[in-house]
Every structure is written in C-alpha cells, then in structure tokens.
Length: 116
Ligand code: 5GP
Ligand code: ZN
Image (cartoon, rainbow, N blue to C red; front, side, top):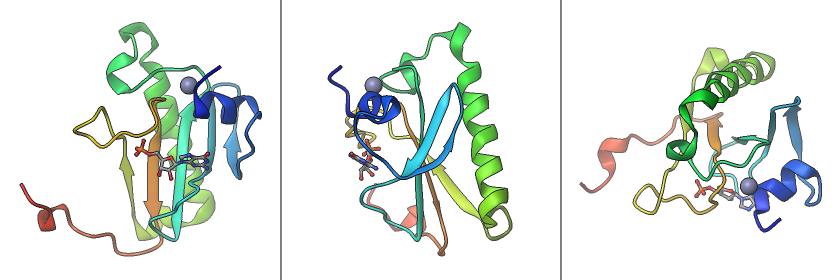
C-alpha cells in the first residue's frame, strides 16, 4: 500500500477522525487553511474524480450526504462552507487519492482574486 490516504483509511497512519462509516472517512487536514478544514475520502482507492467508474459514482452522493451531516453537527450548515475536490496537476491535486476538502469557520477568499 503506497498511498498515504489508503494508509489513513486503514488506520496505519493516524488521523483526527471526524466521521467514519464502512465507505468513507472524514478527518482533519494536517495543514488547515481555515478554522474548519476537513478531508472526506472514500475508503476505496480512486485517484481522483475522473477515475471513478460510472457504476460506482454513488460514492460521490454518499460523500456529499456525509458532508451535510458533519455541517449540521458542527453548525456550519448555517454559516456556510466550501467543498473542493482538486483534480490532477492543473487542479493542484497533491495526494492522488480522491478527497473532498470542506472549509468553514471564516469568510473564505473569493476566486475572483486569482490570476486567470
Ligand atoms: P490536495 O492538494 O491533494 O487537494 O490536498 C491534500 C491535502 O492533504 C492537503 O491539504 C494536506 O494538508 C493534506 N494532507 C497531506 N498529508 C496528510 C496527512 O498525512 N494527514 C492529514 N490529516 N492530512 C494530510
Ligand atoms: Zn489510496
């Protein structure tokens, strides 16, 4: 097993768990960029969103359902949050195991500030 998030999913590398079920794990990002910075990963390895076969795409709905549960539990369903999945090199994906960033707890910077 060479993938860092597979190791986290298997408990080989420790993480601060926020939510877990048989299909997904949510844990705090090691280098948070917001007061709340949670990563949600499927336990099954997919390199990124484009690597999920169509017949397994329900994992994405499940991940979003889990995000909603965490948002309600932590109260940021009311204040707002951002969900990001980086894909590939241009998308800035560093860890090649599908993951969703959930950012909350402050007014997040607007994308319009970025260079085109
Ligand atoms: P990416 O750039 O691939 O979208 O995001 C990878 C994220 O994983 C980064 O925000 C980084 O801080 C986080 N990360 C990398 N290694 C670890 C780790 O071992 N544990 C945790 N909790 N987060 C990690
Ligand atoms: Zn993996």
